[in-house]
Image (cartoon, rainbow, N blue to C red; front, side, top):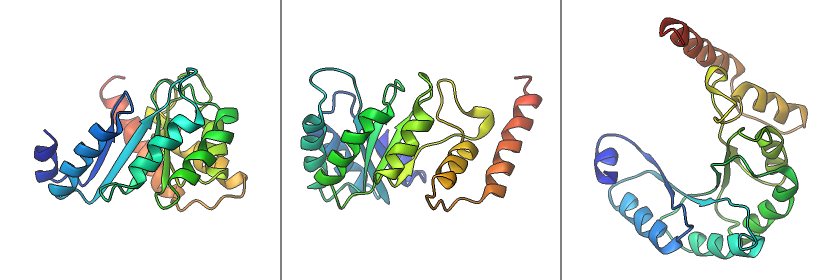
Length: 182
């Protein structure tokens, strides 16, 4: 399947192995690179447990950074459980373990904390945060792009996003939802 999507034009490949099995993730990243992926992102899946410490994540980030097949390190929070206080130690640990890789944070607003988590992660060196167009945002989705850009700007962080394009994208999806009766 991975080979097929790359052959058919997908150029950015996300690898997120739910158990944070780095050898498996790196094997997949290597296949993606061999098949011509232009950017390969490997995610570490966030979880709440006594095992999932800063050291646990840093050890895995170091191994990912040592691979020549990975372009971006991702902190993946599928449950929306990552909160700003936890980010204050975890993001610096990831940055120290993999300083050459840009850090991307991907969270969901399921537990409502993602907007504040993104703000804190960006302050601490996360280069990207994953968002959604307003009609598709929040709830179990990612935070709204427009609101995230506004939050980052209000915090004095430079954001290279065109607000007009964000508005057009949101208007498109709002119109599509109306057309589909949603």
